[in-house]
Amino acid sequence: MDRIPEAVKEWYWGEVKRLTLRSLFYWILIAIVLPVLSPLFKGVIIGPLPSLHWYINGFVVIVLGVILIFWYAARMNRLDQELEQRLREGR
Image (cartoon, rainbow, N blue to C red; front, side, top):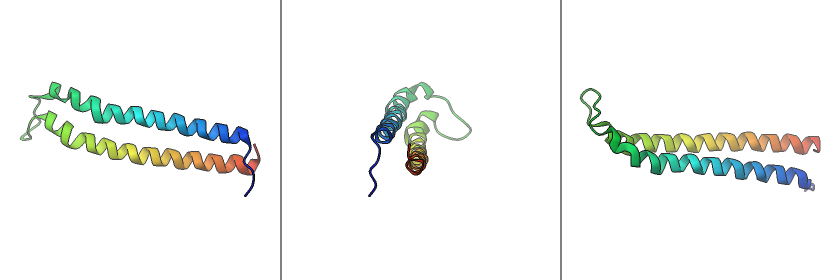
């Protein structure tokens, strides 16, 4: 296995940490803040559906969590491709 330059290692792990922390922040917003604020939507009714705050807690949070997972995976794939390119170029 080829030796990976220290500068590339530092760049990659810095990017991974930054992406992971950003994803953690988004997850906290989705999983904690949104359900806490959902009682503000109590009484908001769209058509024959129950009050909107039930949908925020039961459906919207789950859907946004799954979207966050796919977003993180796509960003990591892009980061890995950039790492491969930097290793090929020898930077």
